[in-house]
Amino acid sequence: MEEEVSRVYSSVEALKESFGDAIQKVEEFRGEVSVTVDKNKIREVMLFLRDKLLYDMLTDLCGVDYCGDTPRFEMVYLLRSSKFGNRMRIKTRVHENENIDTVMDIWRAADWLEREVYDMFGIRFNNHPDLRRILLVDEFVGHPLRKDFPTEGYDFERPFSVQLEEELNG
Amino acid sequence: MIINMGPQHPATHGVLRLLLELDGEVIVKATPHIGYLHRGIEKLAEAMTYNQALVLTDRLDYTNGLSNNLSYCLAVEKLLDLEIPKRAQYLRVMLAELQRIAAHLLWIATHALDIGAMTVFFYAFRERETILGILEQATGARLTPSFIRIGGLARDIPDTFADSVRAFVDDFPKRVDEYETLLTDNIIWKKRTQNIAPLSKEDALNYGITGPVLRASGVYYDVRKAYPYSSYDEFDFEIPLGKNSDVYDRYLVRLKEMRQSNRIVKQAVEKLPGGPVRARSFPVVPPDKEDVQRDIAALIRHFKIMAEGFKTPCGEVYSSIEAPKGELGFYIVSDGTNKPFRMRIRPPSFINLGALPKIIEGQMIADVVAAIGSLDIVLGEIDR
Image (cartoon, rainbow over all chains, first blue to last red; front, side, top):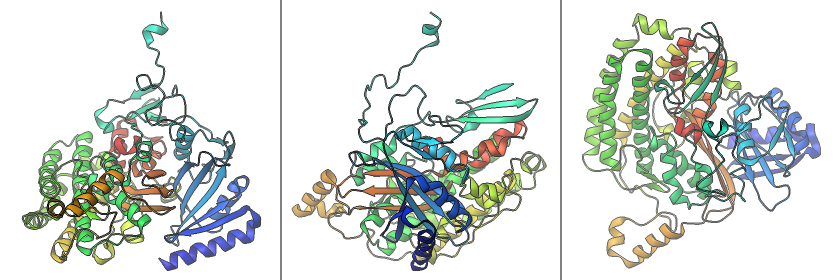
């Protein structure tokens, strides 16, 4: 456990050396280190982490909605190095109606995960080749994991408009 | 030609829809469509207290309720910094490993059935039935136990439990031998599975694959060894690896895993320590049922915990376990109230399924069923 934490801190030092001010915050809670980085530098940071620091697995990627705060959203990337066996969490803040660069060409795992974030939060990813909804239907209105989306939905009886084939054909 | 497969197809193990673009019998492009079973579990959890949200986790991977409970409880316990009694840890390991064997048995039964070996189904379900009976003795439920609770277990195991587990683990290796006689050297089975749907080591890591599929590609990664939880470091077991990363190797890895799980259960029964099965921590862990019936203060505590829940410190934790399908993680963000501000589930099946187009493109259409089976997906977990 302590070994792992010290390895993460050496990665953090390497990041600070290369990116300076783009590394905005480093927090530790229950032995897990989170690093907040500048949104505009996310691709450079991720490439550096994969190629130089050997974080070769993207374990998870998700969004969090801090409704009321600015910037509103937070993107969380959980990385793991299969060589050294430690994890690292990278976070970045995204404004509402703002795009963020995709990381799916860095780790293919991000393909579906970014589609899910788009589906649930409405965060758009630049250069993602196939940014469609993944779990919900294409006709769905709204992004349900946003805090201002009611848990029961806007219209419980009719969550999204369905047009039957018979109606379309008259 | 474009062929639509599913969503109602027996080999997709739920409601998975695949659009297959074909050139003759070769698949050029595959597009999975998912979400038919979406219930919004992550959203629902935000409106529930920590204790209430536990029952949602049963319904993720419904072949594997106890592991889901365990992963969620470990995440909340990490958030609370709560130490669990040794007996509860050992029982959790025992239950999770029994559940893993049951999940793998369900997998081998349906996977073999998909490919055409019907007999295996009856063999595997015989043992699965025994395990579900054992789990029912302890938890009272077969499918959705909600038995592993925050702070320990719902209650201690009954007296007959250890004996039935012992009888099962002594018998089980012989049963795995039986499955092997049916499949491992079976020429038809080999022709249907060897060199089918390969996935290289580099691709597997790039796609974030975990679990038996990753290990069949030859990567040594198992959460039980890499980040031991619930006293797994006190057990003696091996992590089987594959070489050729094809459907056959995934089969072999899972069979060996069943034997290893059996070893772990055996050790857990033999070394099972005494003591309480719940941490004593007000206001997180409810009092024992006997106390509630005798003591008015305990009754009040019980109601308070059930109605209001408990508050957690502000912060965020990620905790994961090795579920039968792969790494099942929970990322919980707490804002200091009695409900999770955000509960993110890292579903192993979802991420493993993301690699399905990669592993079936260029393969024959007849092998799609074998490839889906070898990934061992459960749609309840993919769609959440």
